[in-house]
Image (tube, rainbow, N blue to C red; front, side, top):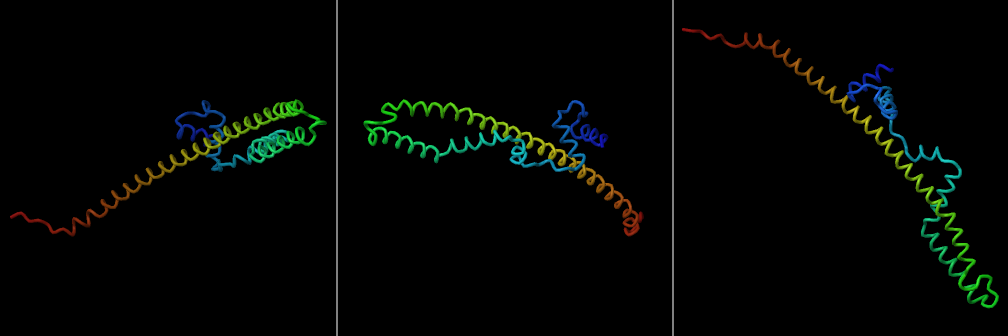
Length: 183
C-alpha cells in the first residue's frame, strides 16, 4: 500500500510523500484505498463537543434570539412598573433601580464570555469545514487527473487501432483499384 501512496504522491502531485502535510498524506491514503473523503462537518464537530461546550452553545442560541430580547424587555418593563407604580412606597428596588443594574451587570458578565466561547467554536467549525472541503477537492482533483490519463491512453489506443485498420485495408483497396496502363 505504501508504494501506491508514494506513486500517487509522485505521479499526481509531482512530489514525494515526505514534504506533504499530514492532511495531504491522509488524502493520498484515502485516494489509494479508494475511500470516501466527504464527511458531514456537523457530525464530526458534534462528536468532539463536551457537555460544557454544548451548554454554552445553547446559552448563546437562546441569548442571541429575538425571543430572549423581547422576553427580557418585558421583564425589564414589568420590573420598572412594579417598583414605580405598584410598590411605590415599599419598592424593593426603587428608582434608579440599583439592584436591577447589578443583576444586568452580572448577567452580561456571564453571558458575554459564554457567547464568545460559542463564537470561537463556530470559527473552529468553519476551519474544520474548510479542511474537509480541501480534502474533498484534492481527492476530486486527483480523480480528474486519473481520468485525464485514462482518456489520453484510450485516445492513443484508438489511434493505434485506426492505423492498424488502415494498414490492413490498404492491400484490399489496392487490389480493388484498376491498374493504370501506360501506353
